Image (tube, rainbow, N blue to C red; front, side, top):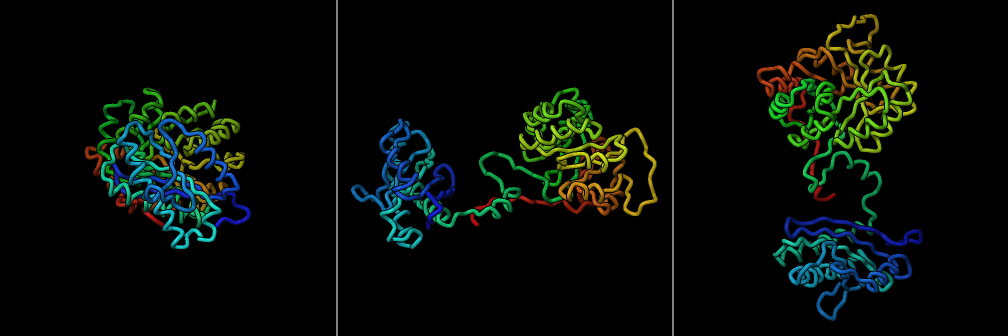
Length: 406
């Protein structure tokens, strides 16, 4: 339960299906501490539409520990009030009492503690049976999680990049499961781009690149247009920033870019500001090494390193290939790039990538395969993309899951 270092414990649970779905946030703590003060203050200072009520199993029978129920959604009419004062109130109170009976809360300490439960009741919810059962289950789960101090930090770090929130309407992919296929859209013609985006297969292994020519014509807002077509897909804004790093990173972040690219030719201060700003807006930073003679030398100058380094052969320049170093690929020394970044970086390879070079790139250590015209100018865009995915052995990748319990 609560030890000497704890003032109160916090629990949360979401249970059920809409519209009767129940979401409970609660705290449990000593009457003599912050929880008790908040309990008394809430009763003494009710707010219109969110009036707190005591949890009672039935009229004149409050539960123990004493429980205060605070509606999350404004009570606008009698129907809303009846759902809170009826099935939700009784369910939450019964769940607290059952938690004592089952030993989740020690019976000897029931008088010492108070519970404050914030309850979500959907205005469209009508089935009282489901409202009761969902709120009962959510309260029991939230209480047990509070007492167990769930989740611990290891669980948060394990789950944060593979769990999804069911109510935001899209999935966040933090590129934790390479390899990925990046489709580069360098065509400054939205109608053609739209057709390509719609034709691409649905796969968690695809990244869509809003290329520099496309962004120059339509602005970073083109990223939003791509996301409207493919909300679940990672979209990369290839800005190739050379100056005002924090400003341009912020603009791309505001434009909903998941990954934002800067040039490895930029001043060190610009690159560092760009990377830091990407962290602030929740986007991944990418350093493009186009025309950078020695990417490793540049990376060693940075106090912070990017999330992705793109080893980039220019479209219109065929670079001489080094055959002297055993670990040198036609895109550069991928292993050395990863080493200088503490092996916490993804490496993308771009320029001249065809299906028959996929294995070579992956064996050299590439995490992201960047493909442009081989897909975007193909007669069968979907078929061309699938050919790359199949060769990469990631066509059916699904790294996401909905966590219903742990």
